[in-house]
Figure 1 (cartoon, rainbow, N blue to C red):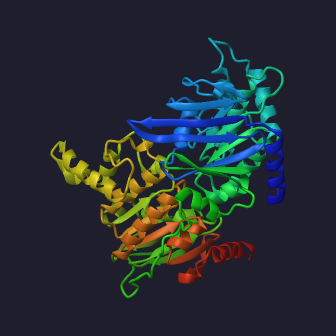
Figure 2 (cartoon, rainbow, N blue to C red):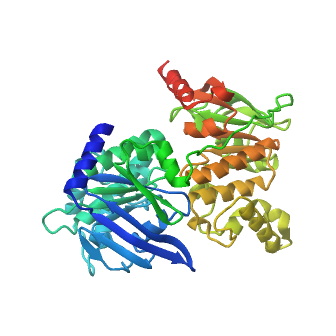
Length: 525
C-alpha cells in the first residue's frame, strides 16, 4: 500500500468506524511516582497503530495494565464500545478480545506449534476439559494457511526461524481469541511489544506483511517499537508518550522521522555531534586480526587502532555479525590469529580475551549479556568477584558502592543496584552492561547491535559513553545493520560481502546512502 493509499484507508476508517480499543485518562503511580498521568489512546479497526516513547515514558506500564499485570489507579478502558471495569484480573483484557505478543515471545522450545495455540486457547475455559487434538490441528492449519505462514503445525518451536517463531506467537494470540467468538466475528486487538528486536532485519518485512493482513481483515494492531523507520513503514497512525503523558497522535502518512523525534524528545535533533577522532595509527593496533576464518567469514584481515570506532556491516548472512564473537573467542575461528597488545593468540578464548582487556557486548543482551533473574549489583559485579573475594567471603559492600556509582554516572534508571535486571528497560539494561565492562578499563570493546531495541534517548546516551571511552584511547568494533548508528558513531566502516571485506568508508563519507550503496552494490556485483 502506497502512502497515499494508506492515508485514504486511515481517513475512511476515521469517518466510518468507532475505536475497538479506547483509553481515556489512564493513570498509574508507583510509590507515589507517576508512571502514567492520564493518557488517552484510541485504536481503530483496520489499522496498525504505533506507540512510541523514550524509556520511562509509560508505554510498558500501559501494556502491563491491559495485560493484567498492574491495576490502574484511574481512567477508563472501553473495548468494542463497552466499558471494562478495573481491576482486570490475572488475564487482563484477553477475554475481551485483546491478544498480546511480548518481546521474548513466550514460546517453549520443545513444544509444537499446535500445542501452543491449542493450550493457550484452552486456558480460557472454566474447569478442566480434554483437548480435541484432531480438531485443534485442523484449526491451527487453517489459521496458518489464512495468513500464508509456511510452517508445519506439528513442528517444534526450536526448529523454526526467528521470524517464524514471531508469526506463530501472533497466530497464537489471534487464534486463542477466536475461541470465544459467538457466531459473528468481532474485530480483534493485537498488542505487540517490540516484536522485531531479535529478528534479522531482512525478516522484519515478513512479519509486517502478517500485520497488514490482520489490518485488512478489520482487526486492530497496537505496535510498540523504538524503531522509527519500522513505525513509518507499517503503521497508519502513531501515538507518542513522553514522561507519562500524551505527547500527541499523528497520521503516519506525511509524517517524517524528525516529526516523531520532536514528539519523543521534545527536540528535533536526535544525533550527538561526533567530533573529530584522534586515531593513534602511529602506534601498533590494539587488536590485529590476520586470516580469520569462521562459518561465513573467510581469510579476513583487520586492524583496530586506539581512538577509533570501526563499524562493520553488510547484508544478513554476509558474515559481519560473526566478527565480534570470532575476535572474542565465543565463536571459535577455524583459521587465523588475533594479536592484542603485541601478544598473538592462535586459539582465542573469552577468558583469555578478558585478561587482555578485550570485552564483548552481545546482540542478545537478555540471553547472553546479562542474567535477567539477578539484580543489577549481581550482574555488574561478575567481572570483579575474584578481586573482591576474601577466602570464602565476597566484599559485597564495596561492590555495591561501585555499582551505585556506575548507575548514577551512566544514568541507569532506576539507579538502584538491588533492582532486578530483567525488569529494566532495554536501554537501561544496555547502559548497565556498558558500565560494567567500562569499569574494567578495557582496551578493546566489541559490540554486536548495541542499540537493538533501545529508544532514541537511550541511544544518544550510549553513543556518548562509547565516544567518551574512545577519546581516552579505547578502540571499538561495532557490528550492526543500523546505518543511522554507523553514521553517528563510526570513524570508518568496512563492508562485508560473502565473508570478506569488499570496501571501506571513512569520516564524512559515511552516510546512509553511501552505506546502502556499498552494501547492495557489492551484493549485486
